[in-house]
Length: 192
Image (cartoon, rainbow, N blue to C red; front, side):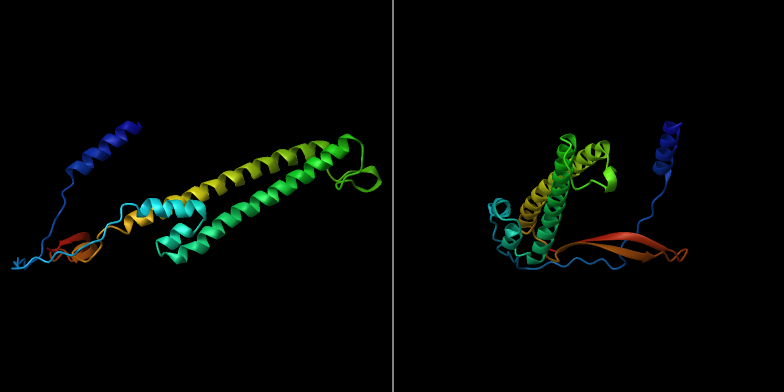
């Protein structure tokens, strides 16, 4: 049934007629001189940014002169480290209490009159949960560390691309004069 809907969708989209519009006054001007701008290209910039970011998080972003990204890097890594530390301390508390409970010694989860706040099964379950959350926090923190290295390298690579106004792609709303409806289009400009 799903294949039938997919085939119908492709048939309908292939039979759809698209309208295209061009500019009314198209003129081409030629210039006698060609201006060549010198672009400095540093092929080692992405690897330097990645290396700096691996040594000290945020240093690659500073190398790329994107200083506003540094607080986000430290906030992300700090959050991961906080959750790792919190889950690790809770895991150790539950583990210590369980070991004391097995040896029939008092622990921090003992209740009044011999009625414990948490049973042994609850302590085992808490250990498993906190250990899982601790390991996940470590994995997420390592992923964020790698992500900031990749971001610094990618940003250094993209800074070397030509993004001046001689090559632009702009979304444009065009009013159809036949039915007075708005059509969404795109305009590509090449200036030489």
